[in-house]
Length: 453
Image (cartoon, rainbow, N blue to C red):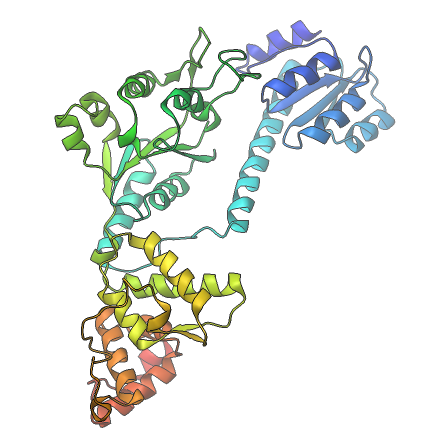
């Protein structure tokens, strides 16, 4: 019966492995991954229902279908109560069985995707790219254009600019239903990277106690992100090039190759053209991965995005720490704008997290920032003077900061109000006061249309 079913399903495109007992099936499931288990209700030893319960105790992601010649309500209820996905009776139509297994496979993959999305929400990943600068908008437009194709993408940019976030955006807009898997090629020893990417057979090397698929096959139907590909050893580059050309991988210790269906996205902070010229990176691999190139701008080139990101990280860090810190002080904000940010978005996030931890008030002050960020230069918001009579009033400092924020956001009052921590009506009132005071901001009260927009 096993041979008959395996032959019938294999001819319909399924990859089938048959075992004649529940013990053999459990032993196989400990070593390898499967989407669906089809078991007879009556087996030698443990029953099919007992096997179903044992499988689902260890692997909730596998769909179990129970098959029996005894078409009774009690059998069907028992199978469902044991956790079975579905119940079929013999004699069974092979086409009907194939349809049931196809539905179970889709259900299994949907559950895996929901698990991935749930984990993402729980980990509070950055849900989207924060900012509205022209440089970022160009990147977002390119992501939208390339996402629907299967072209290999190379993402370049300095460390900390958010290259993995861009890769995830490409995946999420691609329509691919499989997972997004990532690996840092620089963080994995060269001796293990081949196994991580291509998988290995049982006993292929020391400690290889079980077979493993590898990321190329685990990313089936999804996206595999190879970060810091410029640090990959030349020998591994050769194997990667062949995999990309042939669209197949050979696990370590195996004699056969397996096709993969995963989109490949790579990233690096190195200048690969220089590495190619100096023979540190294969030229043919460079052209293979550089079908579409996305250059992520550094934070210093994104203008007003600095303050928008700072407020995003401020809200998230304050929520995590349980502190009532809800805004940036004017001097602190001016320093954030003036600083060069060599560590880019990652450095900004760490800076704000530190500032929230040190904050003694409900706002981030200049003293809460790292010393490197505290600009020693005179700023438009807070002049560096020691004579008390020359110090500006708090109202004057606030007015100057408001003008600085409006300049940074190109006059967008909605964005400026969000950065300043005001509602729009409060901002408009302050602008009206400034227009009539000693420190005019040259702002007018909005029309009814603008107010209601």
